[in-house]
Image 1 (cartoon, rainbow over the protein chains, first blue to last red):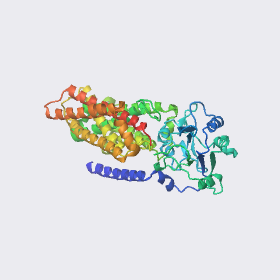
Image 2: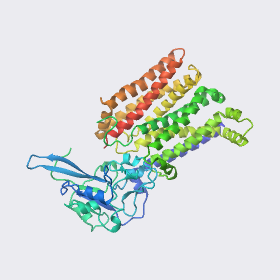
Image 3: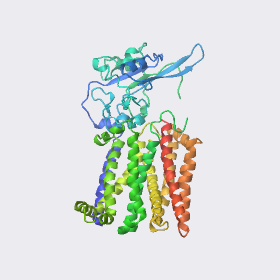
Image 4: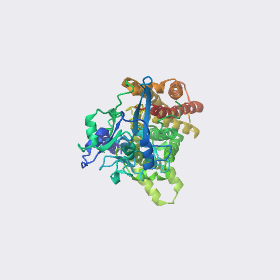
Length: 230
Length: 313
């Protein structure tokens, strides 16, 4: 009995060690590197030019109407900071807060049911609300804090680049269309001829929290005015 | 910033209770197995402490799961977690461990109490008796698997939080170990408290054995807490902000220093050391020490959960 138990424990111990070492080596980046998925021709991304943005919230309103977002929650926020400088030379700084459509998305990684997933065709981080049970693990895991529980469906929700509402009809996302100053550019990161890629090559941009290894696909062009951040 | 309501808070106290109960269940089972294996052997089923653990472990894990299900925004869809699995999700793997743990837990309880169950059955239900006999033959394997599952469950309570990469206080490699050790000590405390309430001898071999393990366990826990916060502070940046924010003079700072360190660790350690040298243990000593331990672990879960979500990167 004792010998069989010892053998058993050895076996299970070795198995567990192997499994946990395998699991631990699958880092965020490795997740996408390990799976050489059939390369799709499309990978959508967005640029927010903070020089052009005037904080009018037209994008927020357009998104709300197009995607029927109830009051109290939102898929996109424009955060205002400032004013900086003395009157009359005052300026504000606006930044867009919305889903970053990460290449290595923490929400997708933690979702227990696979309700959060990356659409292989478009690179869009999407939600399958039929599978969502509302554990809110994705909301806690998202370092950009852009997910919320939809008050009516009780499932996790967020920006999907209007995939379900407009993209299918060949239209640009509602926020891009609504922006009066053309601060938003949406396009295919894999198409070198796209406006998006041309803009990214012409102007220096940054992405939020890249140190977390999530590889976000929301690019920001920083304001020249405004605070210098330390 | 209010202690229980602040921007960015996603998971609140029900999750802390769930983590507490899951750790407690794993700890109670762990100590019941140790008691049977090293001290009581075939007499284990007579011991009020093993009986207490056999009641506490399933009740705690069911209670915890119940809280988890009702905390979902769609509780009626909880079965989807059991059907769909995502191998990269800590929660998915945890649910797998929880399911296996419950099955093996009942198998083990059946093995330990097979004599009593056999008496109750009498001549009825021959199939159950056969199953019982078969389980008893497999007891070594069942015990081994249950130890592994209990330790996995205890660590999982920490891994669940440490997977949240946006919060430096939670995304910390020491957290699963800290939660495992504190979960084991809460299980020990619950077993002792339940045992003496079931009229177990407070000066018996079980209490002496568990107290003997509890002292090093508390010392390890103090060391892990120190490592946890020292590591955060030495990492600098938002990790340091998060650690100092948690340990400062706010509400949660008091919970940590007075509740976790004072009531939960220092007092039980002092009582344990004192009981070790004094000749015999009385009901009140054992019950009070265990209650403080339990309270400390419960406060630790809340402290980590709330302060962890206060500072993001």
